[in-house]
Length: 248
Picture 1 (cartoon, rainbow, N blue to C red):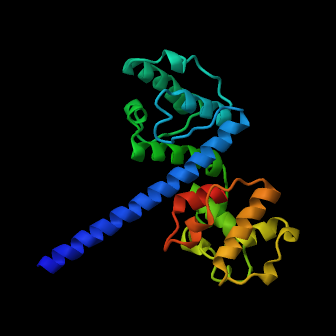
Picture 2 (cartoon, helix red, strand yellow):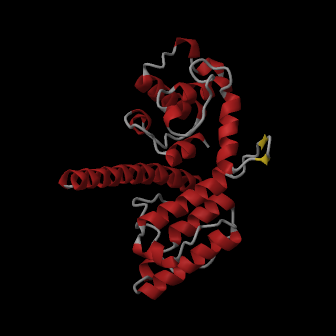
Picture 3 (cartoon, rainbow, N blue to C red):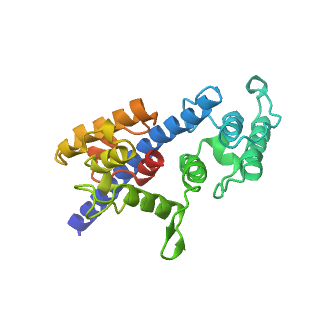
């Protein structure tokens, strides 16, 4: 019985470490994504993806940057002293996001932003990424219009069709199928064959392939490096959300 309890505690501990690793990866990738969007409107970047929504200002700015909604009146940061003042600003920012931009935020409440609730804030950012970067992908499958995730996967499958070491068997997910850099390289080659010598690639050189693909995408195609090589190569199963954020 002691052995069973030990194994159970070990399993729970391993799951907690894995969840923390995923959270850290998401926080890093989501921060880069948010700052890329803010930069386009010359807004100051966020430094802490959990704390910087507390005054509502960054959420309002992100709504303007992504959706072109009109900025509503907010109290300036220097004038925010009491919780009700913060909550008023947050309420205005959430109105801009949910009503003006029509983004569903999955049970998000102002208190979550004020308190820096990690689960709810990461969920909010993911909802915004899905809405802005993925939801617009429209791909017809045999059953009709695919969901956002299915649509993105179908698009990837079409772009990488016939590429050695990718198809067959084809890209089936947004985690383990991206560990060797071949799918990333195939997407770049499909877009512009002059950017990468696909025939010279060896799937055994996962780190080299991935690093080269991320570098080319950033330098030649202007695609921000929302993730690092280690996020794909050095983990048993890459985080699906950060891969989708990057691919989208």
